[in-house]
Image (tube, rainbow, N blue to C red; front, side):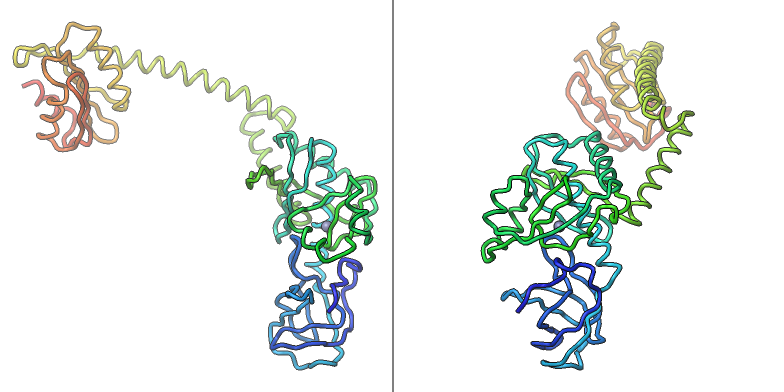
Length: 398
Ligand SMILES: [Zn+2]
């Protein structure tokens, strides 16, 4: 049994080792440079003794187990060559170190900071922050700026095993309580990864030796995973470059549409939104004025000894017409006010002073023309009528 040598020597890509156990397609070696899945970092891929590796994991006894894609043609005692997949490992080293740089940036702008976890996937990396600071848009921009600045500054990254007690006493060292707790339980020492003058974390992953190796970092966004944490997601490498191009394309599109440039975009968009709000409010006022005028022109008919105002409107929905009908009923000397309208399907709105129940009028109309609806004595409405407004109106006039 041995720990992976990958965290200590992350640049090794090929090595020879002796097979100590073979169980079907699961192989254990006397030493290995493959990284087993753990601590938020995915397992290495690669080739062992000429056979593809599907997964690398740590078993219950703490041994690193290589699960192969096919039965091996080697056995216990044989010497085999392992080749670590360079693309995936290099990506993980850069992404993993970037997460430490991001946490280091958080140290500079967040209050009451704690480390809540981390995970690498092929497309993005996430870091969970525990902080009393609200991580808003400005904070995301500042995080990204600080991270890329730390990359440019080419800070040295180093790692060493130190006694757990000593690590616990050094307040600057970030611990992921959830994933590291198990490590402390059966180990006297812990690996501390330091980014010169920037960040210190207890971590068993693989890292680059200088921040400049990380390359461009693009913050993607934030979310709330619960437990009082704020999750920040970011991309490194090709997906960061692609994302940056997408964001830039959107910004140029928006600037073009608003007739401005990138620097004037925020102000121009805010001005446009305010102008639109004002226009919407003016439009709503004008529409209700038009609606009131239409309703005032409704024909007056005598029906069962009561005065009815009936008419048709188009271009307004049932709710708008309903509100206007109530207003018209209250403001005019009329017993029943009936408006037939057409939006998606013909509808009828009835506002009554009470002598003829509005609900009864709607029931009469829907009995005759189909559709449904209802209401009380003073107000009711029906929709989905199976006849055009003109026909319903003619019926009501008789
Ligand atoms: Zn790490």
